[in-house]
Image (cartoon, rainbow, N blue to C red; front, side):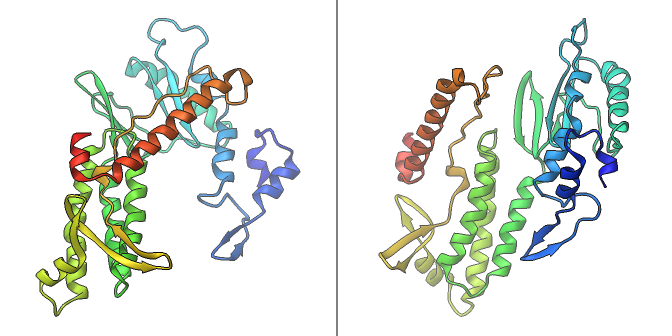
Length: 304
């Protein structure tokens, strides 16, 4: 197995033990005789070590005319390369990349490799990048909305006959996780769209659970006016008393665009410690403000 990764700067004995260590799935251990387990931490680590040096190959030291905008953005085994003209990317950069990968026993994926203009847009790591009237917008990739709705349908189908507050807890985990993943890009319309689609799905689940009851009875029991807005929610008993749980509204989550890390900042350099402390303090402040905003009434949200 280690014969295929001789270029990785690790002792062959250590690398061999790492690759053949196996993996655990549902408390069962499986051997790894070839390749690495999908989703394992070793997979992206080996990819990063394998593709180290690609930046120096793509980005020239002397940036002549037409090559000043050559850049590469890499995450594990996924990467994009930007350039000013298709000719430079297709006839100069691509052959270099193919030779670089061939030396390591790799090759470009035919299905995933494509050349497109920024005005046409492209997908990368679950996001869609496209310029609209010279403004770059980053949005969730087409199909990601359908994926979260499919997960919601799966939860509603799997958990039948459980208390409504338990169902809301499971739904909130799915909705909240997806919303927080895309809250740093242009996704307000997508988040509101998800809320609109989930409402009838929950209604259908309640009607199925209470077949002999009218919708008026179900609505009175499982919907109410919480802080000025009618939504799904209920009270349930706990050891400390009654507690309220509501269906999380993805559209309520404030959009916080990602603040790019300063290019010359190094988290291991003490000279940049003040910069990272200020950045962390700002993130914590935003998190506190978001918690207050999500717990506020609908009138306060409109005024914010």
